[in-house]
Amino acid sequence: MNKGKKPMPKNIRKKVIKTLKKDLKDGLDSPEAKIVREYPKEKDLLAKQPKKKAKILKDHLTSTKKSIQSKKAKAKKKISKRTSPKDAIVGSVPSSVHKEGSRWIKSKAAKTKAKNKVLTTKTSK
Image (cartoon, helix red, strand yellow):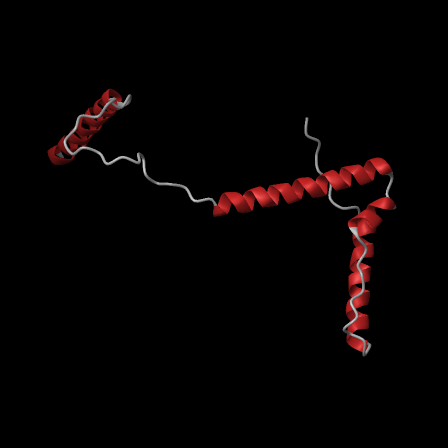
């Protein structure tokens, strides 16, 4: 069974946000703005967590990456709107009759009957 996916723990999220804010602040004030500071990597962040929790977080991260990739692929996928690749012969009889044909005819007849009934009641008044 699939277990519920948990978001990134609060303490790790706080550390990431703190380092980002600090880097932004340092970058604006210091003349060496071109120096890129390394952000904590996923492995480093997960190393501070217990092994089981780190494994769950890593699995969560990989599954979200996969789901995003599959959604992107599905969105970009080209779907053919043609029913058959061959050219149909004009005036040919269909190979199989639609299963709901008789039911459609019955429902159509019932609808016209109901319409006629409504019209007769309206005109008689």
